[in-house]
Amino acid sequence: MLRLLKLLFVLVVLIAVTVIGYAYLGDLRPDQQDVSEPVELDTN
Image (cartoon, rainbow, N blue to C red; front, top):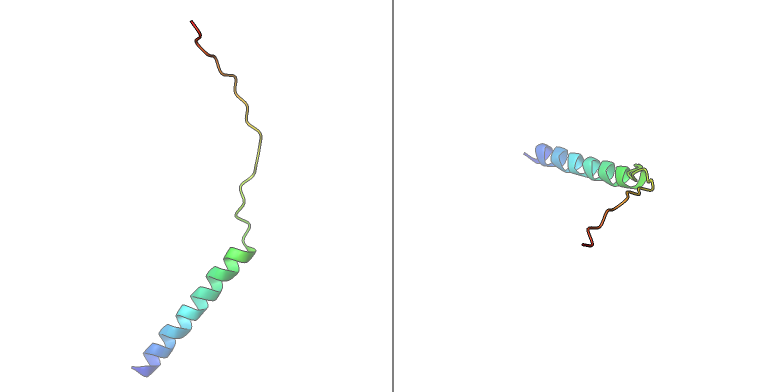
């Protein structure tokens, strides 16, 4: 039982390190571009 808890703890630590590493090193920023569209206003 203790072996299973150790394995579970090691897996949780590895997953946490992986997620933190991906958050810091992963490039998650979207490409930015200017968007302009003409707008017609009905002023009658």
